Amino acid sequence: MNRGEGMRDISSIFDYFKKAFHLNKSNKELYYPQIAFILVKASMFVIFGVMLYQFVMDVSGGQFTDLNMISYVKSMAWWGIALLLILGLGSVIMEAGLFNMYKKSLSGQGVTVSDFRQGVSTYFFKMLLASIMMILIWLIILIPYMIIGFITLFTGFFIIPLIIGIFTAMWKVSIVMDDLTVLEGFRKGFAFAKDNFKALTALIIVKTAFLSSTGGSGGSGGNSGSNFNNNYNGSFNGNTNTGNSISESIDIPDFSPAISGNSFEEVMQQVLPYIKTGFYVLIPVITIAIIIGALVKMVFEIFFNLSIFVMYDDIENNMLTEEAIKLKKDPLASFDMEVK
Image (tube, rainbow, N blue to C red):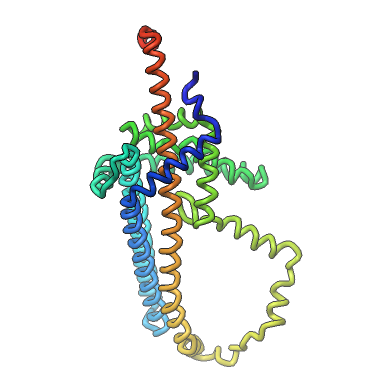
């Protein structure tokens, strides 16, 4: 019997989902690090919103010359880069800690916050290196990816990431489950995907579909691509008079009399109360929306990640059982394998 032959049937993923559901239900500690990170991201959004608000207030007050405007924009850019780095490293920390918690949960003994800390100290640099390698892979194939995507009428934009996602799905899982190096984990994860392609493909497609519907997969964006296409298809297919119809149905105020002399300062003073109100309303509303969306996405992420770990553990144990049975029937089999 080939490796994992009895587990490759697509229907087997429902068994993984069932076991993952029970593990998820009995290990609520898996949510604590994620919730903390969501609050950190929400806080960063609030900080950025406050900085943008202050920038708008300073501009409206006429406190900027060309020189300090450039300086202010540079400082905003550095803050933005710093926030991206913090979020990027935070994501790697979360991945290292949670993957170790997923591994521990399979033992049936429950997980604790100390398991998260252990995972960070053990796997952080491996996860970081794997993530950097993944970025480099995408940079290398970016141009061929774009070409193939356009040649295939945008089908390649979906198929190529799906294929890459399938063959790298078990990369970091194998690093954690078997304590392998980054390259060893890549080789074993690739071999696992090849040997269990159908079941793993079905699981990844289901996971991608659910995470996309809740705000994105392994990253932000979610269904923004399809929304973009839908919106622009409507704009370019028989709706060329949209701008005219809007202008005809809506009375746009004429600000031309005010635009003279110190018109910018006058207009800013008029719209400043509305800008302030917009910030006061939008920042808390968007922050709450981000938190709610992230919490919903978190539930699905933990469930499907547990399913992937369950699949890996189940198939590997099944393979070891098969090898043990072979050795019991033929003790010389292991010697023959070593000689080969």
